[in-house]
Image (cartoon, rainbow over all chains, first blue to last red; front, side):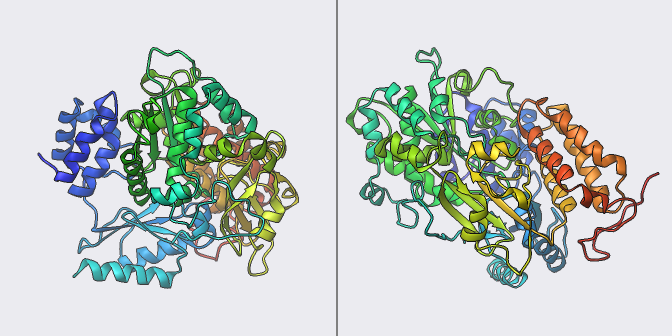
Length: 160
Length: 439
């Protein structure tokens, strides 16, 4: 299986940075997931073969890292932080609001495949709390009103 | 977005280029960029190490170990290649400062890694950035590319004859990977399980070779020390606690934000002056001084200098700089519960005291918050935590245990108020599912 030209050139370049092939595994898994949507059996077999690893060794690594998933998610993965700094200023309320508005729970995906929801640990936005990430984008200093606007914008973008 | 705030008491060293476009290499050069590494190339490696030692710079990731002393542990001769590894896995709850360095001054990290490499005679460096910080990884990758293009990295850097490669590396979501030995395991393409120490990374590190591992802010502080001198940097702080650091003010505060203040700045002043005090006419209930791994301080304990040694004397730690302020609307049992939920979730599972201990603590605190707490469990939580201390490969177990001991010791009454069928006095009635009290 082949990935995009950008992925392939990055993969080839990164291999030259380390004395062992498997050192590229963790960032490569995330780039592969970004492209394919999830770490499918095909992706796992491909990366295992390229890095001289068994599929079990690759799955072993995947299960450790919270951003990696073998199951497809929504187009926009809404990650709400409820750790201490965000919790003190309304992070839990934001999570509850998302659950109600989207009709899904933690690790759920909406029927139309547009949104997934995840309760996450500290994302490094503590001084701008409460905060969320949608895929890789940060949305901070939120209220439920601002959060609704953020989700409205993604909904518009995703259904164009 | 991650906006910048300021206060007149700030002493801007590591943040001096914030908001000035210094991600662009030409702008960085205008702002004294890459002068320090060229000076380092003309110095003896031992002279660089001594300068950093005498500056009083101590690890800004949380442990506060003397940076110069750590570099001095790298053996002069080594059969295996030596490495410098920048820890940019910032994940300690309450901490959001390395994020700003990556966003506004990525070249200062590259330059710090380069100086560390020259000091220990390493020729390869890695800058590991947590997976969630993707936009910052993009910025760093461009900065590295620009440095190579100008001959500041690669073969014969600055025409000096010294070869140095620095590479970006990305994570994929794991707090434990911020622990230096788990960081190395992750970079080597494995699960982030820590290694037993000794041997320490400076002697046996990446792929078995001597490796200097420092936090991003620590490394970003090094160029200023080389240019300004150890005496100047040391004088900004307190004895044995040199310099300034980024403090992340968060929680129930009027003016949360990241502020660079001298080491030893008073915590009470930090909360009420810099942070603007507690809004809505509420009172202070407690403050976590340096990220969730540090024991909470009571209002009567906040008249303390924020440096490593002074905070250690209170029984807590300066930690990562994450200053999390709680007002009196908050339930400490709930706060302790959320903290233990985090450690149980993030425990790698290797060591029994941590894996089982964090799980039991989370379950017990869940029962307390749901009105099903047992009196004997107040003391049990303390004793169990005590027995986790020092019995694990890495400090995650300690990071769960020490805060728990402080919560129980300092807020005992609050735990007693949750006993045996009483609903949480802080939560709205009916919002917390009650659990039955077991005999």
